[in-house]
Image (cartoon, rainbow over all chains, first blue to last red; front, side, top):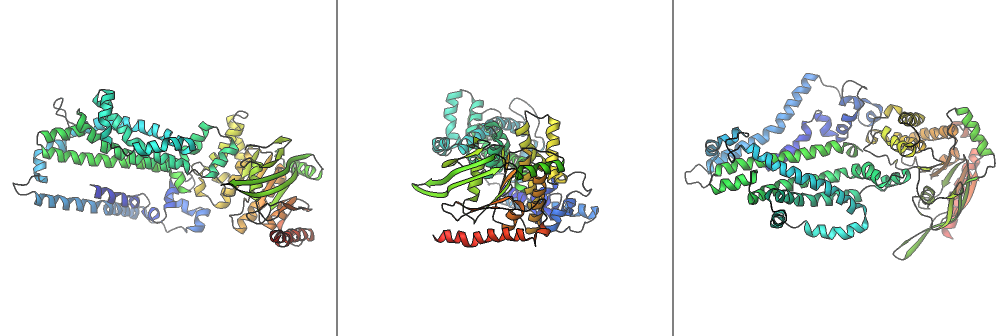
Length: 331
Length: 285
């Protein structure tokens, strides 16, 4: 799965609406979405034809609409096909390796027979503990949403403080550096003792896992705000709140989103482990429960679910980041 | 600071304010600047004194590293003065503010805001309590019109050329309606043709609005073409005002007509002589 994910992210840039322009000149791709709407009807190419850009990038010949769609389908196939081939190959190797009756792990065909209901119907409800994996994933996602959301807000504020103030950095940074090395699950006994309930404890573990990369990246982003922007703010006499919203957050946004992306990945890693220990309805507990009743096929299906959801979470945060920081990257 | 839109009236006003003796508007009095780092003190400027009248266009010229930009930053309030004082309308300057708007060398537009929003940010901040929403919009558009940038108002800085960015930087500074317009090598990073265009724009705007302006430059022609007086700094460390030259050319000035004008050539000659003879002498001393 990871391999596929990397492959896909590598080729994703080429699969955008203007494959050639996007791949060859990232600048142009960033220009396209904010081009004045009514200027010229042909979209991204029109930007290339405006005087400023055309002096450096001559307009390329326009292809007809039909060939463009053909090219698009071709490029999508080119990006998806290799990963599909690899997955098929892996499944085949796995099938052969686990084909003998004495194999300790189930082969793909056996998983399909044993856990078909879990694969084809993510959202069934047969009883309080017999529900589809989709519901379990949603329960886990809800915990991640709360824990990660809190971590994002607190992390960005603390990061801004540490990045902006020399004294806050000297005081807090060593503490952060020590605390961030504590593994997520090591916090669990303490949080269980403090909250006396499984659900808030799991959320706390998410929070404490995700917050460090957010704090550290935000602080680096704030420290890297160019002096020019600070001068502009000084001449305009922006107050602290205005400076935070108008200069700090937009300028540090690429760094903040890097932190958020690392944070969401860590959250998803931690929630599964935390739920194994705290029980309840989440996907992590499902795996532990399946292990206790020797349903290996169910575990493998759950792993695929976790991988896919983790990949989706990463892509969502990264897409939001790209959208939010496109102005900064274009300059 | 008078911002009249009628060009003729504004131009007459400008002539009055530069030709009349006028009371000093901006005073730099015996300013020293030194940086202390790790117990070592480096003196950048020593005993710089200068008086600038309202509506005057002053260029500060000198070799690179002589502290030209430091003077400008001190007037802007971005750098503190070590000794001496800077007075604007008899008030000491000790913090940055929109009454001394700066056109930065590298434009310093905020890349996540459109051209319009970059100017709007300044207008909202300076006139937020004074002008209504629609008045502020009009004000922004008027300043963009002044630098001929209304066509690109919805673009982001990353999508426009260097010369256009600098135009927007000028519009943003003008939009604050500053008492003094400070320009720190505003055209240093531009090619010669774009630079000439922008110099003409600055002259035109100066004629229309009659701003008091201080421009840091290392370009002799630019200094002579644009300014009423040229302040020449000796080489650092411990740079001081070496010479002040009044440029006695009538306005409006035309670049091409001046090429053979003896007064222009004389002014240009004396600045060049200063830069290549006198300030070398100081360096050797």
